Image (cartoon, rainbow, N blue to C red; front, side, top):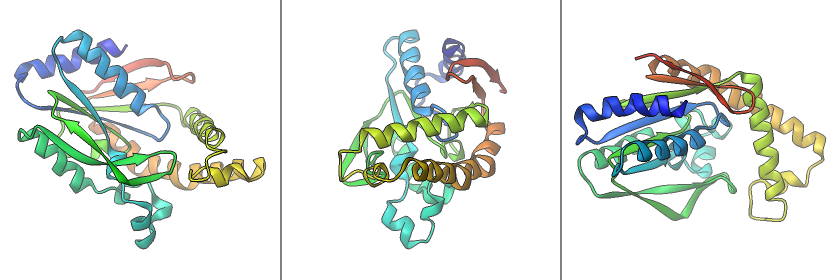
Length: 234
């Protein structure tokens, strides 16, 4: 089904193929945005030889934990106000205007924060894929994709991913998940449920899901992360 999406994007891209083209991919936490971004990039490359693509995560533009704490919004991490969307738009504008490459912050999942000691270089491609929970809030994009799934399934994916992070980092003291790994299982499960209910689910219902109507295409996933349908809205 990714091929269907590829074909739809290329039809639009080929109308003015010399123009810098931006694809935005959004959806809930743990719905598989980065995976779809990678699959789509590979499919586009195979379908259009010579096409160059780069993938950029909006997480690179989330404010550092220190800033979120100073502003009293750490418990709203992932909500629109926790991102520097102006900086993100500015960097994309630099590429659109012809700049060869840009330097952006690096967000590391294992520390759950921006790594102040490292940055990422993004070279100007023909197509830039921007993925993340706030990607559809960008004003200047050429193709918008929303990834949808039953909320019960998304919670299970979030639970599985978080437990995996905890397991992988239980021997790494500097990791955000290290201290969690030392807690009783019942407490860990309670904290995950709390994070889902008070942060991720609230963010999804209030800010992420309403952006669905702005998407050119909606990808719907089944329980096993398999795509069962794509709805083209534009």
